[in-house]
Amino acid sequence: MDNTAIARDVFLHDAYATDTTGISIAHAGDHTAECHLNLDARHRNARGAAMGGALYTLADFAAAVAANSEELEGAALHWISLDATIHYLAPAMGNRLTARCEALKLGRTTSLYQTTVSDPDNGRKIAIVETTMVRV
Image (cartoon, rainbow, N blue to C red; front, side, top):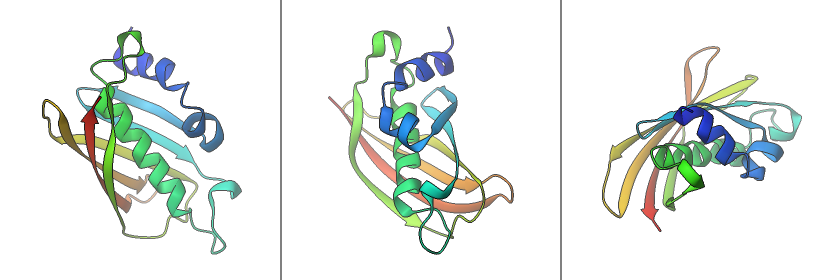
């Protein structure tokens, strides 16, 4: 079974991201991940844009998938978020978001990941999130 299929199985247990929010995993492997979120009314604020919390949840989930993508056998999730900084760049008014996450620095006990959240319909960057992961 490939890393993406394993990640989908393992992260089904992250009910908030997968069930409540509706995030799906498109790719996982080599300390990278791509996740998708189809936006609907539950994700939107009073202006009709995606809530910042929905953007952050998507980015946080993508970082968790990327950081753990090489050690998923037996659901061994050793990396968790230590801190994160989100930079909101533009309102997300479309119907779908994509989060692409990659490792910027891999360490023995801490690693740094960057996630770009974008609107795939127009290629517009919506947010950039830097996440420090710690091995537990």
